[in-house]
Length: 424
Image 1 (tube, rainbow, N blue to C red):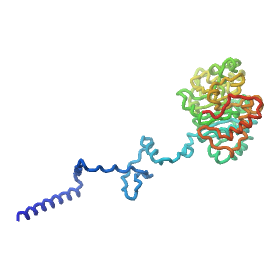
Image 2 (cartoon, helix red, strand yellow):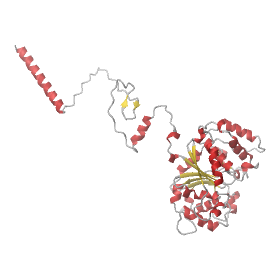
Image 3 (cartoon, rainbow, N blue to C red):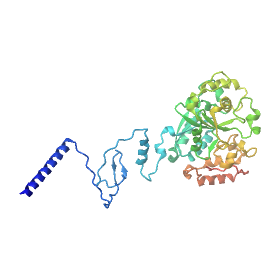
Image 4 (cartoon, helix red, strand yellow):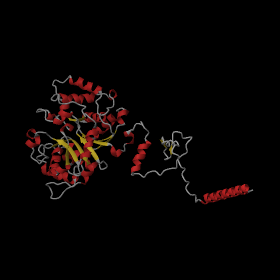
């Protein structure tokens, strides 16, 4: 009888405890369960599986999606936070190739400008062709030309194969001068060359720009010279190479009757420009005691020095940076290699060590026999068929291009060993 009464009491206590637990659960006031005591000899549980896939909605699942429950949604990191970069990195599957051209926003494109008038159509197209052959990033071509050449430029560029036209877009502009006498500007040096002085005013939606003359050839990716923009300090807004390496044989140091930059002057055939800075800067000058904006400075300086300048717009740039040397970044001569660097012996050390990066065939050397190597390189790129080429990888030169150079060089009567293309 005592046993039965004890059993009844235990059952009653158990029912009371169960009822109390149910009431507590219903009211939401459950106490956290006490973790079970793990015995020293008990086997450890394997660690939970790591998620193998991230769904676009932000939910995590393992590779056994059917047998695993979904974890609760996590808040997506805000744009600009550190978590955003991590999420983007995780969302890319391992071994999945990254397509830079597909995701590169237009503001990160390389902007390349050229001014072509008169008989410069072929030279300009060959220059643009070299830029496309040797570059990786997408480019925007800004072509300033006469009305009679607009349709031909557009026609020729649209005939290039799709594999190349997808690497660039082009815009064609008329020749315009925003101040002063247009005819004076147009005839300042070579036809329309002074147009480059007005690029900061015309291309108001472009932040940075690489300007080149029509007789320039790229022998390595344009991306490489574009990187010089990152090396500008807080005051620099343009970059050019010296006119010469040796003052005693340089033109400016011997003949100039106007101020010029440094000891040898600068050559404007290859010019990097931070247009945003150029539009906002105030430039020192000897026309007024106060600084002037870029556009307001050009015509007064031209009027002051027009009777002593020889090389037109390049002389004006030398005058500007003579008074504002802190605004100029000077890059090495191999990025603007000209006949002057080998006419009186080799005087571009950078080209001897690293090869020529940008070839500038001024003095008309692409079209005569005074500099056979310059002419051979020009003809090799001009005659190279797009369909024969392959995309360059890491700056390597396609073998077919090297064979074309070798074939063309056989027609040259003079050997030059200073130029070796494809160096990085």
